[in-house]
Length: 388
Image (tube, rainbow, N blue to C red; front, side, top):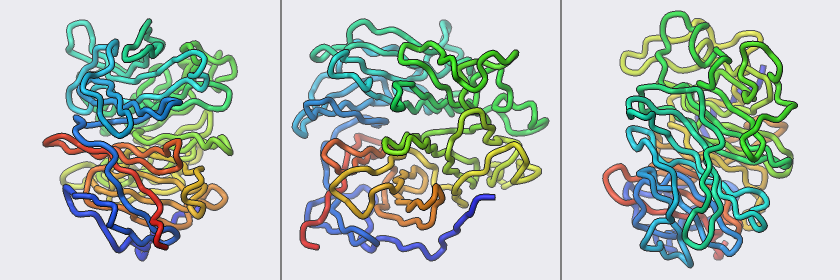
């Protein structure tokens, strides 16, 4: 059994950001191992969901309504990039993650995940497309993956993307809000004949790697890498160790940080640490079961985990190897110290706004995409305070 640390007495940064913060470079946040400033990078985005950087330093940002935006020298360009796929921009759906191919400088390929509408728009699923970025336009858009996870609901798409060192593309797919009641063993997230509640592993063109864990097994989709996931909205592969970390929404309580291994079952909804929304009626008969993986860390109450990053930059040497997780309902950014693949310390660094995405930029700073439900949203970054 993994070690769980409920850090009731965890150190919280003393300079917390107020709701709808006005951030200036004079604000210094004193944290446990590094002091920093929270600096506004760009404003005026419509519910940004993800960020990626081009080799020249320009930033791509997805807006959930369906736009791919370009930020150049800190200025949001007025027109969206052309050529994005049509999306189902309802509920939690829309244009979601964006990543560059590891060989982007030679092939110019950009990958997008999104909620894809059915022909009559009565259902939607998670899909992935790629295209070449030429100037301010995507050329040759092709869909390379469509999840067998169609539903009339508008949530739990997953949609996080990441490449490993061998150019395999990983995609997270949520449980599409399938009810967690009745026969939990028969829940779609436990049924490997569909992609609901799974993580899939693809070649960069969308074909199936021959060494995927379930290739050749009757009744199991060969794309599946792991299963038993609920709503995986945080995801990153450590570029140094290759370890896969995933942040997952629980229901009412029980948000999880998982170390993801190929072929494993992560238990939803058979086991877990949350309860049903509203009256808090228990979901699970047990919190552990042989053959189902335990989280490396979990939050009760939920923080509504979102973006996730593993820090490997130069600007915060004391944070190298730490995991940074955004919170939506929890309105925070947390830092998790890792030893031997276990969480040994949690610290709240920033608080007061919904953090949708967390990324390490090419400059070594930590970037946060904020989400304002009622208006336009900014992107911030953490910069080291120089007056330490």
